[in-house]
Length: 126
Image 1 (cartoon, rainbow, N blue to C red):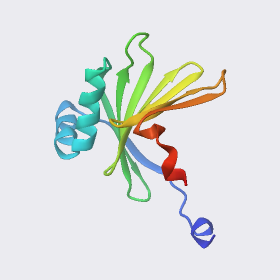
Image 2: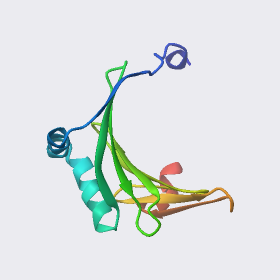
Image 3: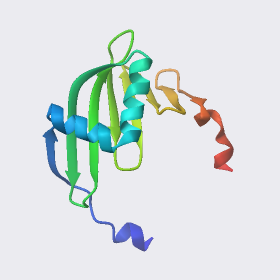
């Protein structure tokens, strides 16, 4: 409980658009982000050569790479930090979250949550 009560509110200090050189540097140093971007491209996602870098008051950093999903061109955002990366896809009432190992599809109208890949193994819950 004390961790919760003593938590520092996370606030954005800056967000900048990455130049081509900064994007190249990011992908060269954060290989997990580069691998997920390549995985996404192999599955039909179109990278818009648009990325941002956000720094928080806690010193944490995140990067967002903007894509279009295959088929209908829904917005897709590859978000990553120093340790992990995920892709979020927004298709109206359907939200998809995935990485290279699996993910889930959440349909708000149907009220369903369908995991796939390694995310379908719920044994980690028990």
